[in-house]
Length: 368
Image (tube, rainbow, N blue to C red; front, side, top):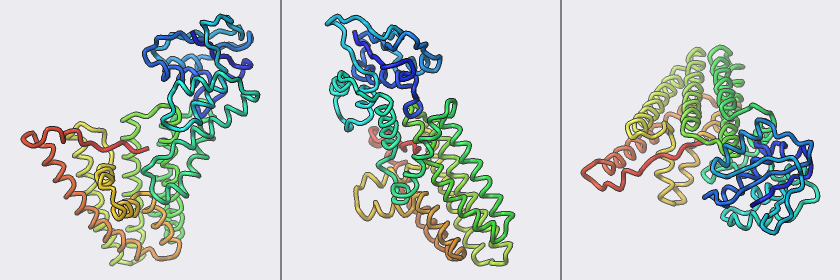
């Protein structure tokens, strides 16, 4: 029997990266005992009335754990009961290194923390900080991610805000970008470049929120990928039309060619995902080349990722090098399409029924 005890009535309801502290504590116990072979009780002072949100999150994060929410704040002092401090347990689960045994996490919760609210704030920061991905590009790692994680921390404090809201917000930002590029002339071109970089930053928020709240899903990853693809296509299309209206036909032609090649590659990747029964995402090429573990290949991946593309495009436009940006885009996209088709053909042969059956496991990893 495990008793998780909180110092007062408000602490178990505190939102720690979007999840009530009580639910995070229960999740730590559930991971330590996945077979549900223990009983768990959450206790706080008599004035605590567990909210509907707290109950629902406890049930979501520990569906197989026998759990009781009580407001006596004391519990039985029997040696058969393990008493854990709720705030210390949440902090340990959030800050101990990855790979730490859950028994160690549980043991860390046995020592009460003198400042539970401060401990929960520290846990919240650690949880959001850990939402970065090993596959982040250079711009994302050093520029976008620090900003997007601050936005995520703010949004996760607001009840009712979900990763889906962040995805829709990014779609609205992309729409505003497209309107600026199409209708704003040179001023709109500059505004569109800034909004494109802003969309690249905001793109990380939905995935960060989902990972922080244990809410990742194939549907969310697919929607995020589609919004990203449409935003990228809208940016190139908007810049191309903007320069075409200004009379720069050569840059317009380069942009159109690059746009067609980008759309073609995305269509082929999406069709492969659909045919293989995988969620639609556009990371299969990146995942394929990461397996090579080559330094040169890693740099090529970084230079063709969306974060670098958005930052470089915005900077070139701000420095009045928009035509050169479209010519560079057409050149890079040509090489990208060739590589994409080559990878899809090779992986298609490996997945064919009369070849090695084990290769059917190939799939793209959803992005966030």
